[in-house]
Length: 305
Image (tube, rainbow, N blue to C red; front, side, top):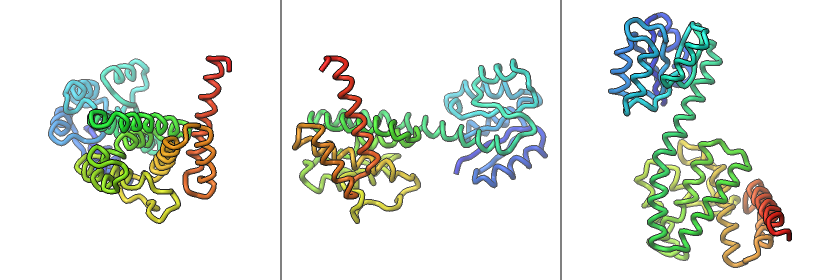
């Protein structure tokens, strides 16, 4: 549950906002002074801060500036609450690091949307910051073990990224899909792909990771047909990853076909036939076909053939 800190010297305002925001499923805390806000944020960093501009002593602009100077609190989104409508004041707020502004008294529909949007952006940033070095480290391990396996991982990552963009995935979904594309075959650094045990080993390798809860599902199921009894029907984790898993499984099948059939168009024709029977995700196959058309068009423009 996301933790939100309200900073407002008006206790009645604090109580009202806490009651409303708590009803949206957030864990809400309150303080009445700027210095108390800084102490709270350092000791128990919240996921987001609602910060009144007009505070006694240290005002909201000063509090926000101090939050952004501290490495422990600099990435906490700050939504400033203000009765000030002057453009210069809002510019001043953005300059000290505010993520957004809400006028007082707040429109709670607007506030709910802004809170959700800020928390989603923070989630994406946090996950990218933690996953990217992990993925790069494992890719380096794969390359040291097997160059062909590494090149396959890079190709899978590239295709999944492009397909995700074509299908309009949310940023958090795309980032999760790309990470899974890199690491779904990590067990093959210990056992060859032909050995079924490489899946179990892969799950054991990713289990301790922060993203291991949902990543194990990709390691286990990315070679399963989407209509098979072994393919997940419901998300087994808090993250709803089934869309990304269907994409990865279909892209993996496409790459598998390319290992035995050099002609990409024939591979895609075979994949499309299998998708029509329900084996693979039709939308992903359509996206792969579009990527192939784009690739052919670009080559024609470059070489005139």
